[in-house]
Image 1 (tube, helix red, strand yellow):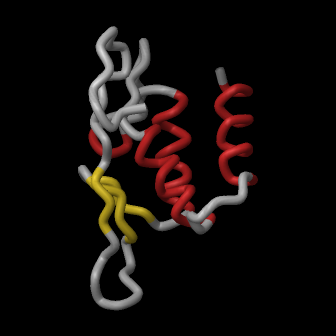
Image 2: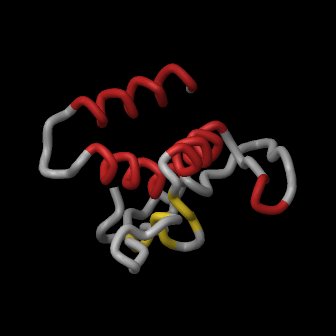
Length: 101
């Protein structure tokens, strides 16, 4: 699981596209944050639900993102924090919802 997750994130960051590297990391955090697992560790905002959730927390900490329903910069460069809504999709659902990948 860890190897596969690392390879997919690495590939995502190396692919040339229209998004800046920071925006790609923001998208990775938005997709990984909150994924649950069999065991959780910690309490409150330090709670880690799974390996993907831990990776999202590390990336958001390193890139100074705040995650609270949206992924936004902790320090706004122009006086306004950047906000991007998180996609809340059923991860283990048999039915796909629109706009969820």
